[in-house]
Image 1 (tube, rainbow, N blue to C red):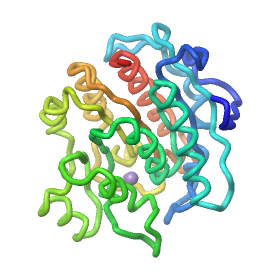
Image 2 (image 1 turned 90 degrees about the vertical axis):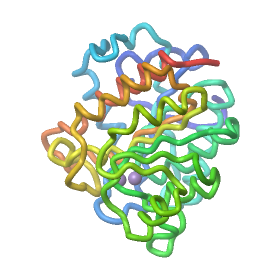
Image 3 (image 1 turned 180 degrees about the horizontal axis):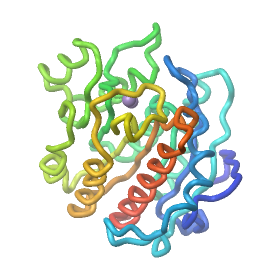
Length: 294
Ligand code: MN
Ligand code: MN
């Protein structure tokens, strides 16, 4: 961890291991430069760190405790302003360093486009990688606002890299007809519309694969998660969503890289969205640590 600059105001509670000894490395990426509707996801990680202190380090759901693991929060990655390509490269280089050191990167976005450089850095090491994608939106556009790199095209860009039978999408309830046709009619991706009921069945089949997990938090229903740029009614409840952690733990799934994106804290003045994101971060970190294999 020499070449990239990170800055830190305060740590996520229970994530104070030294970088050298950590298995899971958490970092923030405050980029929302291609956001089409309501910006603000750049503030996600800085709003989450203080709220995280309201949680316990122990998860009754998973029966695991943050204090039993070596997790390091290295702060927020310093990013250039106003130049998307430059920012994507900075995220790529930052993630690559963590991957090279045999640690699992857990990135907190930012808008969903930040997944692309993080994924690329992980995929270079794990060529057989499979992708689990949670989202309200397909994110399968070929381009958006004349731009090939956007939060609305990010999964299509990942498909360009990995091709068919590698991407598994859950909770999807918004997109163009072309995007749904691409996924459903041509089977380019596995897509479960509206729900996450088939998650366990899919995970069973991926038991021995290397997995990249990307969580767009707008998969949750806006009634419990209004703090996001593109809220989409008809989403899953928190209780439904938390099953994914139980299932990932049960099958001991090897997650080699992951992210959670699209919390836009200022659209929820109760802070419940931020607290919900914190709880998801805790469960995710615990599963990653529990399932960690060299
Ligand atoms: Mn998305
Ligand atoms: Mn989305």
